[in-house]
Amino acid sequence: MPRHSFQYRYRGPRNTPEERGGKPPVYSRTVENEHAMIMERDLAVPLRDGAKVYVNVYRPADERPVPPIIAWSPYGKHVPFDPRRFLNAGVKEGDTSQYTAFEAPDPVFWVPSGYAVINVDIRGTWYSEGTAHFLAPEEAQDFYDLVEWAGTQPWSTGKVGLSGVSYLAQLQWRVAELNPPHLAAFNPWEGWTDSYREVATHGGIPDTHFWPTLWNRWGASTGQIEDLETETKEHPLFDDFWRSKAADFSKITAPALVVASWTDQGLHTRGTFEGFKHIASPQKWLIAHGQKKWAHYYVPENVRRLRTFFDHFLKGIDNEVRDWPKVLVEVREKNGVGTFRAEKEWPLARTQYTPLYLDAALGSLERAPVKDAASVSYESVCQGTDPADRAQFDVTFERDTELTGYMKLRVFMSTEASDDLDVFVGLHKLDKNGTFVPMAFYAQFDDGPVALGWLRASHRELDPQRSTDWQPVHTHTREQKLKPGEIVPLDIEIWPSSTHFAAGEKLRLIVQGTDINRYTKEQAPVYFRHEASVNKGRHTIHAGGPYESYLLVPVIP
Image 1 (cartoon, one colour):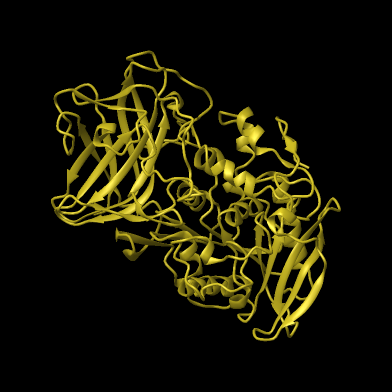
Image 2: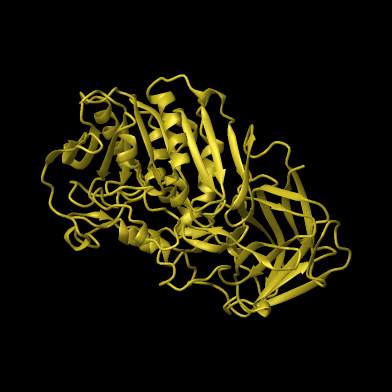
């Protein structure tokens, strides 16, 4: 087993399988005649240490060997994806079947297409044996063992694929770095790659709702599970513990169809693009869209595209995959409206990174440096819904303009009331009348921003090896507190996006001390919140003169 410079923590289960609707495993084999599908449920698969995990296998009734597709999940192989549970998620009735596990491929599509689907309850969850680790090297080894098991069954052709959304994508990065011999291709469909920067904290600001909600949802077990709550408290900065939760992209060589979105700001957007950028796979493709992730995964056209990918790499069919563009980018107009375009690489090589300078006196973004220094302040602990609770800066585009890629806000800030600042950044599109233009957002919302960014000022130290002019990457390895009134430059990473602005439309930059989009917990049970703030009193933005505060935007000519 892997050795660590830290100690993982363990605890009893957060809930029992029975409390979550589970039933003790009893193996069964039935045939579903409508789709000519053998269904093996609660099949025990031994791992290298002898612990058994339980899987459901769906495969063709004629017993012919087919390629398996694995969906690796802590959410319960028996838990269906029911669109009615997620209001406004956009998943249409008929796009999934009763056999579709949460965020997993639908056997009713894949089995008649000549594939097997394997849904697994990972080690230590539900009734699978052993102690549960989450996003860890130990879990990747288990996944390796399941890939090799699937590749050597009499009903398997020996070429294994991986697919799924969110957690089902995240572990694909981890097992792919181990290069199991029977792994032929994988499909991470929106999955973070850096648990510290992309989920547990944003810019060093702890998430107080979604991350705790996740570890509760992962914790159905009859035994011990990894105690992510205690570990998160013990590791407030980025260290070897958080490093152990991230894949080594340089070791990943399997063919990959990576799907990312502009809409999952605060969860999967950043990490999915990072994965595509850095994996060593010589054969890799990226689809970047502006839609809700669950709806997008199950759209029939997208499922057929994925089948074409797997047909090529798992069945050896010479098809149009060899002629696919390496990158497909959807440029958004507004929620539900966008145009896909073929590209050769990501980020786009022809990007013109253009600074727009903050004018604190006018509340504008200017194309030339602002000569005179000025400042603007806001109350940092209010709700952020009143204009007085935020600072905002607008620019009107004189001609049609596309912004696709990474943005950065470099801003000089200070506070008299505290030794730290939590800064929340949002970008909005406004139409020619100055009306907010909403985007699809997260998995369920229709009032989203163009993009988001965050930073705790004491975490402002940059990693010089990983940072670029257009994407600051912070070390998060130490705190650098402020003195009262001290003015410090902050380089704030804004997550990737793609938006078209017609002539006369505006881009608005918002800076405030609370989340840009705020929902009640009832409205958004699976959404991040940052309620453990260091903020006190007023924050001040300094711009112009010696304080060259600017927003760097990716203009596509």
